[in-house]
Structures are given as C-alpha cells and as structure tokens.
Image 1 (tube, rainbow, N blue to C red):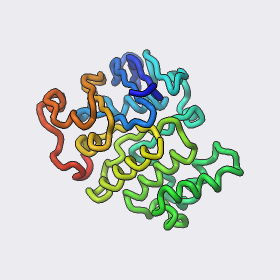
Image 2 (cartoon, helix red, strand yellow):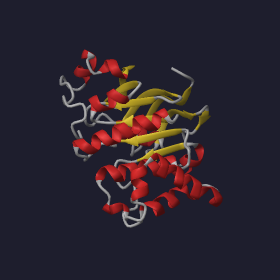
Image 3 (tube, rainbow, N blue to C red):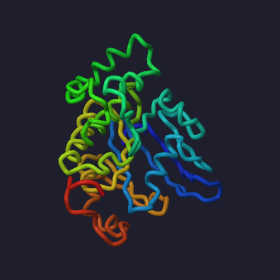
Length: 249
C-alpha cells in the first residue's frame, strides 16, 4: 500500500457517551486506492465513516488525513481539510437545478474558480451537462448519485467518502454508479466506500475491511475476499447476494 491518505486507529465512537457503536476499528487508505468497508447489517459501517467525517462523536482513537489529525474537527470543516462525504440520502438539493447544486457545493472556492470547476464536472459527467437546468429532484436515482458525487468532487478533495451509493437503485443504475467510481479513481481520486452490495464493491476495490459489531475483523485484497471463507462466516454464515451488480442490499 502507498503512503496512507487516511489512517484511522482504534476508533471508538457512538451517538451517546458510553454506548459505542464503533468499538476500536482501524483502517488505512492509500493514495489513489478504492478501499471498501463491508459487514452485515448493524455492523457499524455507516457510523464508522460518519465518525471519520465528523458526524458521529468520537470517544477515543485517532483519524489522520494526509498526516494531519482531524479526529476532533467539526463536520462543517472537513471539506476545507480535504475530506468530501457523500451521504446515502439527502445528498442533493431537490428543488435546485443541477447547476445550482454545483454552485452551492463550490461555495468554498474562490468565486472566479467556480465556473471552470462546474465545466470540469460537466466534462466528467456529460449526463449532468445535458440536464444542467433540470431540478435535481426530477433526475433518476443514478443521475442524483452522479450529481452528489460531482458536488463532492468539485472542491478537489484528498479523499472521497461514500455511504451506500447503490442503496435503493435498480440494477442498471447500480452498474452506472460503480462504473462511475472506477473512472473517478482512474483520474487519481482516493475513495473510501461503505457498501452492502459486497460483490459489486469488491469488483472495483483494491482492498477491503470487514466490520462486525463495530470492529475491523478481517482485511484483504478486494478481488480475493469474495471467495474467502472467513468473509462468508463473518456475514453470519451466509455469502452475500450472488449478483455482482444486482441492485441494492
């Protein structure tokens, strides 16, 4: 693994003091990697990445981004620090046009730089350019996820963090989202991804961690983990759904 862009050590976090959901999890994400966090329902995956992004209180442990300690950084400062988080839901402004969504996301940039960044996003996501005047709420599910990711990328983050990007999407749009993430990584973006659609995520990932009860219980090369019996056991004795890109899990 290359020098880590993100290093998380022994993280303990939860919504209420003394009631941790994340119980000592550790991961590292190297530059230009896609790292996947997997686990059964209730494993604490989403809480884990929300704690990294400053959205769940951290009781102990450390989070470092490009060598800088961001453990106690407020969520609203994370974008300026280089971490862009795409939540599972409510990740676009539905009544605003595609272009206005991008303008708002570029609000931390110098005003003179925003138009060029928007055009950069349109070049990366041509479908958004074709719908630039359309309200985000009128887009398809896959297009909304595309817009949510573009809103995150417009600031050129060091790390893109996504929570269940395939949730609720049809198989067609699941495939679109994972293809999009593959292309984004090719452009040099580092990605941390939580996903229930395990086989699809492992197909595009470099490495993966399996969380169980808030702890990282297994780690390995993503392409090898699908057939790893330890992973099957950690998924409560069941292998994840057989379809590689067969809809949300």
